[in-house]
Length: 235
Ligand SMILES: Nc1ncnc2c1ncn2[C@@H]1O[C@H](COP(=O)(O)OP(=O)(O)OP(=O)(O)O)[C@@H](O)[C@H]1O
Ligand SMILES: [Mg+2]
Image (cartoon, rainbow, N blue to C red):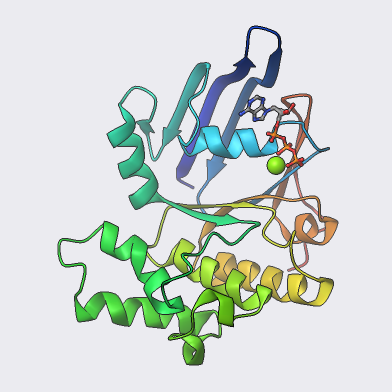
């Protein structure tokens, strides 16, 4: 199995004149192709900080992050932006869709950012097929405000994987959804992992989510204190 991502001894310290927070303390982890990994732990233990550092959105204080063997902090912001655009997909709790664009236009963005021909028919078709995959083919021309929370989260999922990233990072993807809608979103993520072999790292408080993952990282006080294969995972 190929390695998609590796963190080596990363630290993240937030320091002001009055306070010092060690949000990540010597975290090392490897994520392999095809895994669906849950990151769990109490509020404030460093889960979001970990995702932000792994994706280069936040700079580590110390340590190294390799995405597909590229050491992202050895390069500049431009390198990290390129890695994010090409290799990573993001799903946030708050959807983060662009309100003035339609569902389809939102999904086209990652393809456009990676293309010399941002208005090509190919891009439109690919985005539409991603929307179809998440069950929203007939909602392509709707703006986010005209969609339910669950539908908006489906759009963000389509947007997150449309450019076929090596790794999909999700921060509480079911956090803002009711139980039933959250379950459907979870089914969709599992399906993308199993069928399209999309590797995922999912921050979650939700035991239903972690139960469906192949591996669970448990964090506490800025450290991963347990890294376990999930043997209860149903096949
Ligand atoms: N920009 C920042 N400046 C200072 N401290 C920060 C910053 N971002 C996060 N922290 C601190 O780092 C620690 C980890 O925060 P983080 O957001 O990663 O937690 P979390 O595990 O995602 O929590 P939650 O489950 O509530 O989302 C917390 O103590 C937080 O207060
Ligand atoms: Mg968080």
